[in-house]
Image (tube, rainbow, N blue to C red; front, side):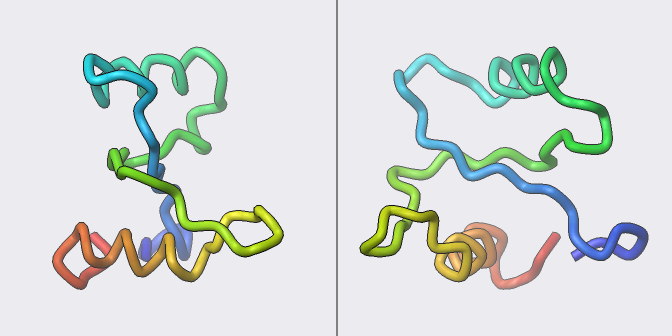
Length: 74
């Protein structure tokens, strides 16, 4: 949740290697995305939950985000 935007963009990422850092990923985002679309924060997770159809399960991703942040959205 965000007071100004309604929702803040957050990234859940599955790292392809053990040396990837949040700063590396953020640098790639800065090079390719407009400023208002930059994720804050970036969390590394073991897997991204998906439906049987292969689409990302946004409800489970949101639950995962809240679990990482101790139950609150910030």
